Each structure stands twice: as structure tokens, then as C-alpha cells.
Length: 154
Image (cartoon, rainbow, N blue to C red; front, side):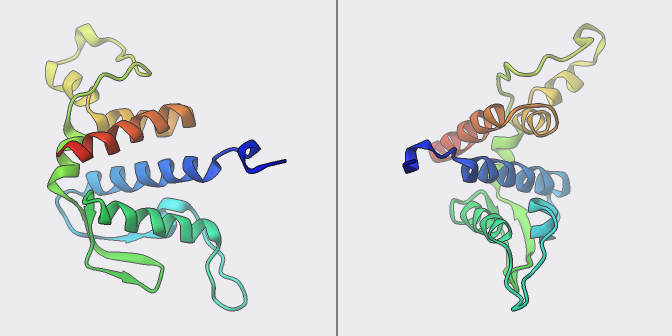
């Protein structure tokens, strides 16, 4: 088996970690919060030497990458466990709040809902939340890829 036969599971994890991080910070916005890596990647058990799992380290790397790309900010990394004073950047807030076409999500009872509710359900963050709860990794990959592409244009 060559390397081309292996699924890109690390990309699926990256997309989930990105989505969970952005949704978590969006839900706290504009407060600066302590962002625990385990809240994003799931429970972690260190080994006998106190080293974290590869999954935990990959999630930490995703969060650092999001900061380097200007989508989030944080003050400091605390012992590979959390990010102090994490918050969305303006660019990220705007990207998440934008209305996007989401072919994976149909708003039920749209005709009876107020326009403000319909618009809030058409945002990118709503699409991400829907994909995290109900969608496939392929849906999440498309939404996160679009977000990253759009972030380059800003």
C-alpha cells in the first residue's frame, strides 16, 4: 500500500477542530476566553512522561495555525493545555456572520419564521453548526475550505 491509498483522516480532524474552535469562540464573542484544547479535540490522557497524544497535539497545531492565518487571536499557550485570552478576529467574525448558500441545509417552516431568524440560519456559522451536528465530513470540508478561501480574499 502506498501513501496515496490512505484516507486523509488528519484533514477531517483539522476541519472538525477548525469548526469547533470557531464556533466556540463565536459563541463567546467578543469575550476573551480560556480555550482548552480538550474542549475541542476531546479527552486526552498523557503518557507516563506527561506527553500528550498525537490527536491532542494536532488540535493544538490547528489552533496555532488559525492564529497564524489571522482567524483567531490568543495571548499565550498554557503548557500545551489551553490558549489564554482566545478570541475571534474581526476578519473571522465577519466571515462567520456572512450569509452563505448552504445546499446541505433547508430551513423548515421558513414561511412562518421572522426574516431575522431566517437570516441568522443562513450564516456561515449556522452552516458549520449544522454540519458538525448532522452533516458528513465532506460537507464540513467544503464549508471550512470555503471559509479559508474567503479569508484569503480579506
